Amino acid sequence: MQAQAGANLTNRPWEGTGNAMRILVIEDDKDAASWLVKGLKESGHIVDHASDGEQGLELAVTGSFDVLIVDRMLPKLDGLALTRQLRGQGNKVPILILSALSDVDERVKGLRSGGDDYLAKPYSFAELLARVEGLGARKLLDPKDAKLRAMDLEMDLMTRTVTRSGKPILLQPREFKLLEYLVRHAGHIVTRTMLLENVWDYHFDPQTNVIDVHVSRLRGKLDKGFAQPLLQTVRGAGYMIRAH
Image 1 (cartoon, helix red, strand yellow):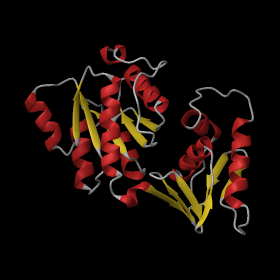
Image 2 (cartoon, rainbow, N blue to C red; image 1 turned 180 degrees about the vertical axis):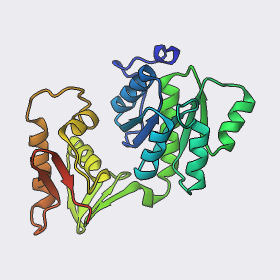
Image 3 (cartoon, helix red, strand yellow; image 1 turned 135 degrees about the horizontal axis):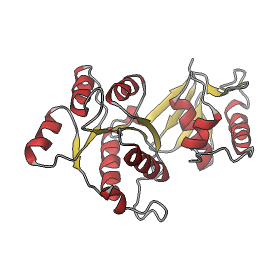
Image 4 (cartoon, helix red, strand yellow; image 1 turned 45 degrees about the vertical axis):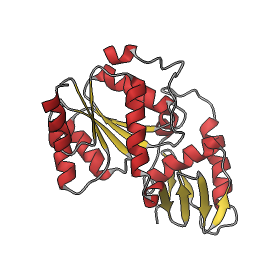
């Protein structure tokens, strides 16, 4: 893949914004998707992946994403049709369309379908990252989009602050990232594998208690002094932040 040659994921020669976003990559090419997901995670973002248009549409509708990266040529439902359906439903999530079709008419079609930006293949990862983070920053101009809530907990992604019932909670960067992932999935069980891949970027279980230690510390900070626990351990399954 030519785009791959334009970026070194190990040395990370690009600069990110520092604000973690939740990104959905909808790409059917396995190698391209793996490379893209890896680069975005190494840049500090939370990334989900769908391998066809129908799965991508379902995730986009049911999930809460800051940016979608949509390949134009997808099985089951192509990228432009997917974009039109989302816009028809009133979904305003920023969308970057990727396509091997680079002439002006094709770019216009992509933008008229509801895409916010259009990037032709092959591309450099640095350019893609800049465009994605630009779209995310545009969305975050609305303060309400920069806040996550679960019960009486509030996270401000712009100021990187956390409060519960108005009481400030000081978190380390990894704890903040862990809490953000849990809150974005509030009311749903988050497995150890999900945390390893999306918070620690491990694609294997290192057989350590790193998750248990961080969850324990986070629970202590979130629940200390409160009668109702917020962070729960679901025995044999994982962890969950209560939504209500």
